[in-house]
Image (cartoon, rainbow, N blue to C red; front, side):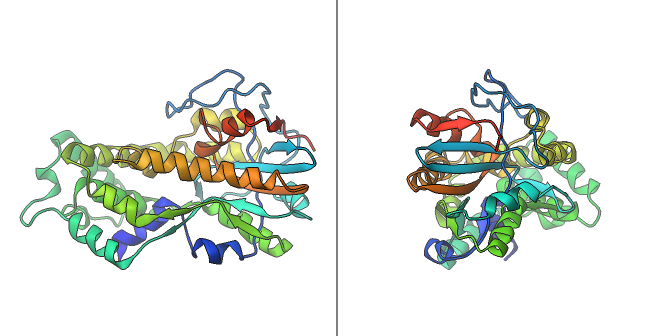
Length: 333
């Protein structure tokens, strides 16, 4: 089912249950490391964490990495963009070196869902019979939607206009990503493959209840639905900055990467739904903080892969770990 496939691929990694994933073997990935010493905002308006050390560009090749220490334990953290061009090249030398002898590699969550929720979502996200998308959104919003579809060869407005605005926007966004060769969570998958090759164990930081999210999407009113459609249209417009941002990331140029970084349209839409902000805070941020904290309780080294939006936002993963007394240093080995 196309709608459900979009839900999973846009939400997070699609995979096994937490119990199954915990036994999988995988590997760590390079880490993004620094942000301005005073709170600043990227192109998306995201307010980033205050960090005392400023690393404009990593001193070694490849993506920058944060080094976290507590006692005899070290966790290397690679901050990654969620969406990346499929042809993005990056130097994996440093990552492969760090992978040797790691306790385990921590990766973002996997999603799980049920067929019952599938049916609720598919039925509930369709517009009433005889109603089309242009009937339920402002003329300006519909014009943007039509322009976005027309800009992408092979897409047809007819494939979306019978859906509620949020679903129409989500599926259009997913189709545009596919058409342009842009993948979500591909850096995490690449790191997991490298970890697997190195014989490193993978730990899933949290499991996302996709049923809960899809049910919350159905609670969006007309205003919320149109807001999410607009967010997805903005996300499509923002893809023009993706090549430069991801290139800067691959070179360890954190300042440039964060200056043009945009939060995922999927995350931005999700945070407008009833109750999801609390879930995001508890799972995406809290789950990763807990997993890294557990790794820091075990002597030796581990590696964590964390999306920029979770790692470096104010009161994000990095801020919370520092508040717990974790020593955070620049990407120096």
